[in-house]
Length: 272
Image (tube, rainbow, N blue to C red; front, side, top):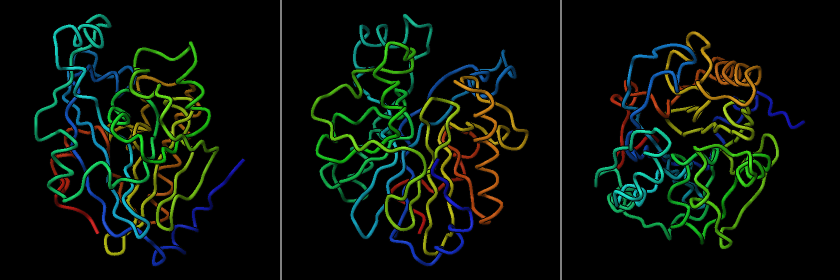
């Protein structure tokens, strides 16, 4: 099994090719808190942000996750097909949340993005892949296989990723995309979930756990996510993220936390 030594992050702190990290706010999901915290908050409804992360690197523009597809909200028929019939509340995507709007503010287009890395293939993480057919798309091999299987659940919208033109780059375990951007296996929430460790020249280590834990309390109190393919692996993933944070003095950027998003620098502002 591939193992990425924690001390490697410390050794590479000044050997990064990542210049800037942009946080893209791609909309909000409206859902019961128990989706994020197993068995806790059954009567609470949260408005949780959906993010993507854009990296300006020496090798070009890299996108980490790809938001939600706004076309699913375009008509009453689509809203019913993708959300209503499954008992799901429709997400909220306004014009400022559109990825093309945010890329334009930064000064690039979809065509400038040469590499896309997907944490997992739930609909709120891969919605713009249809606009990125020219890019290499990296994902864990087991996540790719599960998403195309008959066992994939309602959060997998195959129309987001079942396109023959997509240029898949299948990975297994921990790997390095470029100096300063490492991906680590964090299986648990899904079969092939992966998280990212970004080393910025000034800000230092940023840890992107994606859906290992949606909220701060998932990490503070080691609360499992509502959905998990393997509870033991989910807990191990939470603890691995915490261990990397502690060993690197890094900062965790939470993907779905409605409190944390209010303090983040949102694109076109950036971290460097």
